[in-house]
Figure: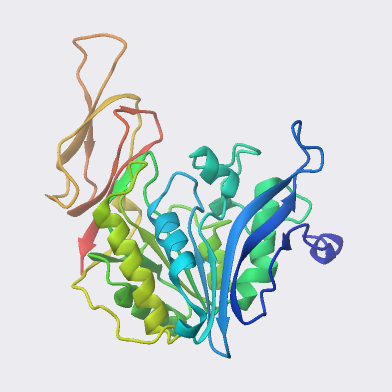
Length: 335
């Protein structure tokens, strides 16, 4: 960014005082002039709960609009957490990319912006970039710990895990993995990203923040079990960092690792997909994990997808039809 851009103020205005004690429910208001509202706004729901001096937790969901465990857990926490239960501050934003969330889409219907590829954002950019800029310049600097909920959305389904990344700063990395374990998901992941450029994760980590994330289920819905994992996990994290009193609810977790790019299998042809293994199944290197049938004619042999490494099937493609380039599966290894 040039100097003028970095100095330009954010167009986002909070309707609550981020520094005040007590509980406040409001919005991040972003002007949005459109056909049906000349002086309209995008109103991103926000809750701030503060009591005295302590750490700040920034809790977010809806980074992608078709992922639901995080928003459910955070809308519930926003209505139930009381100031007397807090030592420090909790900033809750259940749906970061609110236009995408209300549309039920991964990206924003306004600008097709993927929030998790839009950081550090721009105050004079697209709608998604403007929201990202406010997080980058205002909210992330306030936070000590950041928990960003994800799941597979409409196109992927995951074993339920909490995750952090391998980082150059090993103290920061160790702290993040401590909170992953405290979260208490059935699986805990040392996570590898296909492309970390522009991610919220990267923005937080480069500021030195303790950052953890999740992939809890998917398929464009949430289950009673996946929501319970999210609700218990966020409570555990707030207790582990001392913002909430009480003991964490410890849960057994299986640690997994994504050691390199061989974890990912991508479709090179489009068609009808047949998965030959289910989530949680053990696969061996070279085994066939899926077939893709051509759909333009009958009698053609399917294209086979082979595992490039052995391990546990951790994620799978959900829609029955697959396109070239789609991620078909993710394999992780037990630690």
